[in-house]
Length: 249
Length: 350
Image (cartoon, rainbow over the protein chains, first blue to last red):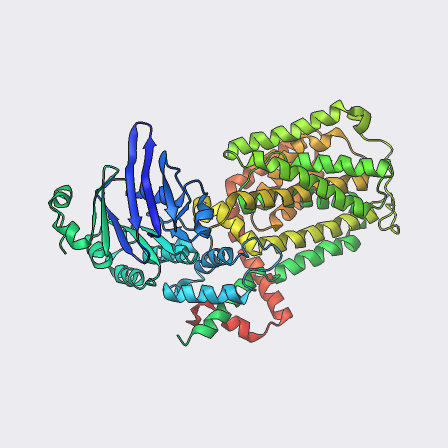
């Protein structure tokens, strides 16, 4: 059984179908990439999956359970977290506090109002683990607003990872990251634990083909091609869509 | 990684350090309690200031920490004000402290119920909805004048001695100390809340509600919770006013009362808890001082001061006073003689 499925997912904004008849199956542990030209509806699909948008029709199943009607925070609790294409961070907090928030929430102490932040060893230990995995230890006391962009991008992923998702949705994680900070980011993404299923949206074909074991191509809101990377790379229709873009990297 | 253990200590020390009482804060409260002996002739205005500070604290909790703007805190202030007056008048609950706590709970209940209206919509909608709720309660109090005394106010309230021991005196000695202690207790509770994981999650909701939901925070319920707490504290402030004046009138629901709170927070600043307290002191004493100079036109001068504050901007005031505050903080740190190990856990330790 796929860990995440969409069945005939549809999202219309007025007369425009941003997502049309999207039926997608993502296998447990997959590194699944969702690609497509600008405006193809990739981010719409992520917004539908994470609950930011409600679909016009169709349904979403997480581990066989229908989550179509659930609120975003409830989907996180069931094990699916996302990052955003444009950083959505808490600029006035430090990375330490930011990660602490997500960890406390997941360990069920996010609503504690009489205990002080940082007084629970289980939370602290997990914060430390995540800070190290995402190489944020040297900036963890800085205000997020003043971090270098690459570090903010790492924090964006670290924050989603702090929810301990079984399914992680990455929306263009490398977008806009300068070359100097890029390797660190790619290495971190490559080192995500194998048991976490990853759905990646990305424009960067190097990253897509080095990372993904399955690729779905979205064009004008509809699924166009779905298959292993080498099949997709060979497909002449995909080449036509990407007019001149280098796919067989 | 070998840095694992020190890093964990660093993390918990850093998080704990946020919540530690700073020397400046301790000095603030020592001074606040010292006023009992320092200014014996000023009890009445100091008591009013303490109540206003507590009321402003309630707004700061929702505005400064959760980003909920409100023009309707008077609804909770007024409801609890009448509640505490009525229970004392009819001898239902005679002991003031119990009545005070109950009044707070009644106001919190109203806060809980109305929070669902407030959560809908944006800032402007919230202003209107909160204002509407307090106006409606004010009209209800006016309509049922057989209970509330209507425009004449609630007459014949007698407040029993606190804990059966301390009588309210004519000079406001008891009522000032009582108000100050209640303010301090509520402040400690509020402080504890904002430094808890719950308080941190509120700040994240204020900063970015979209992302807060995306890391599993039930945004709506967190806002309901803090709105309820805030209403309870506003209610305690209202009940304090009734208990210390043995009177309650329709103006407890007035728009002025809610609007004053916004002024207080503009003067004092939001989001660090002391804004309401400092703002209340400045506002009250400015009002008192200007009113004694020009009894007719004091509102003009208050308005002018506000315009100047907004034009100058709090950033600049903070910069101008940074040296002074730093000096006090250093002095305090030296006096309290912290263990050196904490000082060495600076961010550059790795």
